[in-house]
Structures are given as structure tokens and as C-alpha cells.
Amino acid sequence: MSLKSVYGLRAIRSVVRQFIIEKGFRPRRVRRGFRIPRAKYLFSYYNEEGILVAVFYDKKFDTVLECDDVKKKHNGVLQFTQWDHDVLLSLLEGTDSN
Image 1 (spheres, helix red, strand yellow):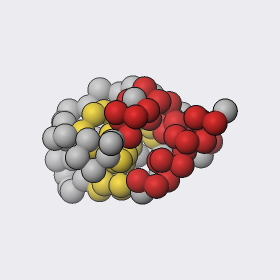
Image 2 (cartoon, one colour; image 1 turned 90 degrees about the vertical axis):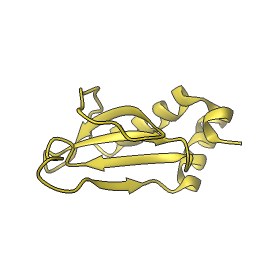
Image 3 (cartoon, one colour; image 1 turned 180 degrees about the vertical axis):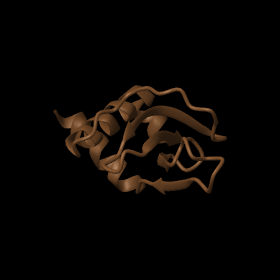
Image 4 (spheres, one colour; image 1 turned 135 degrees about the horizontal axis):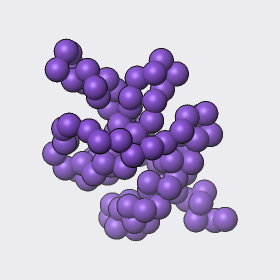
């Protein structure tokens, strides 16, 4: 069973947003000019270098993706960071026990 079917997309977004806030960043919804197949856009934030990072939930891999250099996509290659499935699961289970 996928994390989305067990916890729901709203819980995944909430847990990931809380994690980003604890890192010191402010999540926001930003219009973006592209889509990732099989992925649902969650939110965006600006990292410490001022680069916009988009956060997606990937349905195929059942995990969270962070996409860097969103506004510079025509100038270079997008860099994706995939969250470890176990990290996301432990964050979701931590909210489940509260």
C-alpha cells in the first residue's frame, strides 16, 4: 500500500511542510511553468541561496521529490533530490502517535 492511500496527500503535505519550516524556510505556493509526470505538486520554498525549490509527491516511487533551479529550467538541467521512503514514513508515523 502506498503512503498516499494510508495517510492521504494532505497528511504528507503537512508533514513535509512542517519539516521544511523546522529547517528555517517558509513554504509557499508559487506558480510554476512545468509539470513532472506521475507527481503531484505540494508547495515551493526558497533555499538559503535564494533558489526556488519545488516539492512534489511522486506517485510511482511513493516518496517526495525536491526540484531545484525551477526558474532557471531553460538555462540548465533541473536537479532532483528524492527523499528516502523510510524518512517520510517515520515522519508520518510520528504525527500518527500524537
